[in-house]
Image (tube, rainbow, N blue to C red; front, side, top):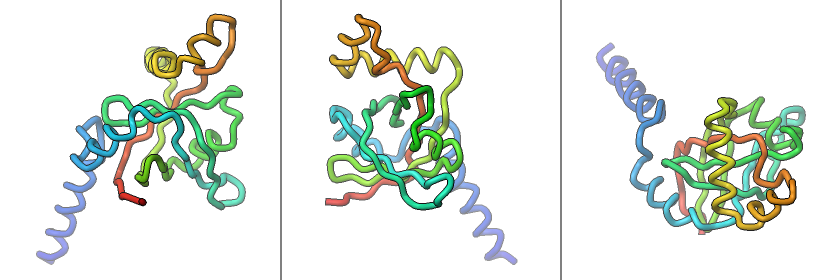
Length: 152
């Protein structure tokens, strides 16, 4: 019985580390710092119909210990629909493999903040926005990192 209580206590502590807006673990923060200036990250989602891995490269922004991505086509991309169904994803960039959970951002303030971050990072999106392009204006997803591994 005592062992069960210790196990449940450890589980609560572990869950608390990944819940809310807590600061990322040091190894996650270090990896995010190293990849923040990259252009593409590879996202692997679970197919909503097939249940099979679905991988594709997408633009990303690192902000406040999280990775932010956007879906074009009004959210009609496979990866976005997959995250909507199964939030667990794997991300790969610059020799790192991240396990993360996606959360669709719908609050207008969050949407505008993410769009501004993308336009700031990606010059081509900013320039194209001046002529009415929707690049950098997609539906945002916040990816909270659960773990990171070096995959070099």
